[in-house]
Length: 181
Length: 258
Image 1: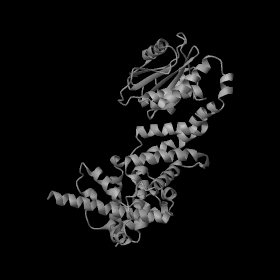
Image 2: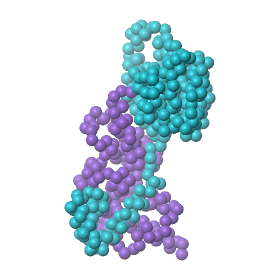
Image 3: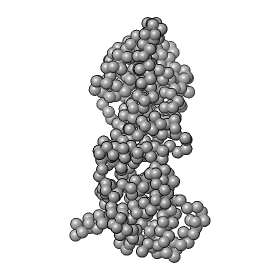
């Protein structure tokens, strides 16, 4: 095994799960996600000489995201349309509304699967910052690097994404409760 | 209405504030009902999002596809096409019997491997051939089992029983890591006469194993011991390969997975 391959395996491949997770949350279809990861990792390898050290995780995740958009641009996937602005303003207050918090409602066995579906309905620009922040534990600076957005934008997308997620989640829980009555 | 501090509170929640700004916001939370509720809400969402079921890890199939892709990127084109390009000089230079036969078989096998069905057999066979074709045979050079075994602990997913068998003429020459079916397999490299024997081992994951596979003059012997799957590959006579398999089985201790 040559030196480049060895360094790549030591620095980049530990983040393969993170790459697979982000690709899956962007592309949704497992087959598309796997294709994106494979494409991205090989591109990362070819471009590894240009990697200037530091944390390889945001570097790899940025490549994943670019590969997703390349694939999406080729018309293979385009499933999420951003909500109109008015809709977003309306739910901004949802972060502090008076409704019971999700944790107040009994935990259901299929909650994970439900949440999975709810996250999937979020517009992509909110979904990706939530995945990067909450699942991958990236800092604002790293999320800005991955998404190519300024830190201020990362912060407002996170806030809106969280507000939306909360609203959708509560709506889903209320729907389930109504269904049971 | 949301409190004006909502974004700063979020930054506090995400660990982005320094100590003094954090102290500020903590004081603010003591008096602001909205912000106290917001933190509560953020925690609930975080708990939900960090559910294991929502995290999609790279599958073994994907890992194996990537390992193969990297093989092609890093060594495949150079190893194979360079050999083809310099073919004539190469063959006249390396006409010393054994080496030439090994390379001829290696080339023939590379051509035939893609159409064969069992990916596991393909993985170990191509890993064996690659180890012969390039400077890829050994990552840790040592005839000392006490050097090779600890090396695996930091590099492979498993640490197999390791021994040298000089009396029986199976000499341990080193160790290596290869990807087999998405696992980081530990590979022990033995010399037997003029032949190289690679002994792969990886964590068992319930796959069905062939017993003995012959292909293009190479033999692969598969077996299981404890949590580990083993495969010995070589172009020695099958009896001689089975001789080493027997010796390794004798020293194998179950539960050697780390």
